[in-house]
Length: 325
Ligand code: ADP
Ligand code: F6P
Image (cartoon, rainbow, N blue to C red; front, side):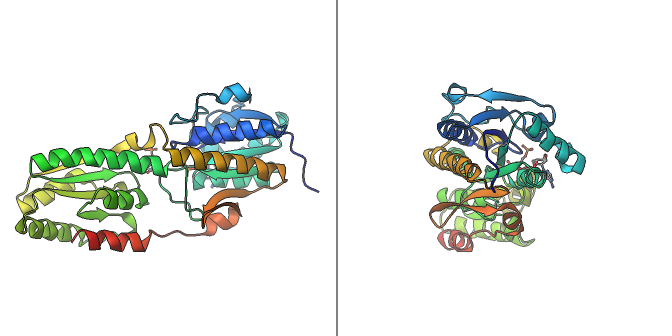
């Protein structure tokens, strides 16, 4: 028989993402609306270990749906990676009367959720990362906002790049995932997109040749979007300037992409995911991750979700090449 859930906890873990607050609000409000008590756990698994746990009510989440960051704070916690730490975390939940936990974070955080579940605490994960690099879902909280922030920043760089007839290498976030770079490459009309999933040694020479051929047909400025994981943008700019004779500048957009007010899409989808996580706990489910696939919100077993792999959207990637000829 499914365990009856009376009290749930909610935490955010790993890198923050705009829209996490909307998800927290939804967990709290949906939980209360269903007659549950809700406890906030500050600073992810680190705060759980330190029992930084407090009661949340309707007013705890007022005025946050529009705010970036996470009111629960976030962290990375090495102790949660050990069997002792995982057992301690579950025992602390039990001591605080917490029957189920909603974990909002990336795939590292899902592994912590999996361990909590193995240790007897019903756990549901929600994908919160600007990187979109969770295989089981087409949507992760924060990706839409991060792309819009980066896109607006690149538009601004383009203005000055055009005035000075320069080449601009613009670095967006994504150490191992090129989704933000790809979307910006298209939405900003860049001449070249560099992503870790498709990076080749010959890319830089191809950029140089493309810039030179574009100059010959009258193009006066150039935009290259580089995902963080591909290589140092400043050094790349120096090499491209030396090879082409065209003034080249690098801009690293950085953590600006992780902050700011979430877009409408991030607020709505994060809210839907938060409410669904509560429903799954109420159904007695555990070790599940909320996802968005084929136009619907759904859920997967965390073990299965972690075993899935995700590639870059090849159709979009090929299109960037076609449209920037
Ligand atoms: P993200 O959730 O954004 O991928 P991390 O990979 O840094 O971020 O993971 C966040 C936290 O999740 C880690 O600091 C750790 O506490 C927990 N975690 C990560 N991997 C594991 C694991 N294999 N087992 C248990 N907990 C883990
Ligand atoms: O996972 C989100 C992300 O912003 C990546 O795009 C980036 O590589 C990484 O986190 C940066 O992490 P930190 O804030 O710890 O430097």
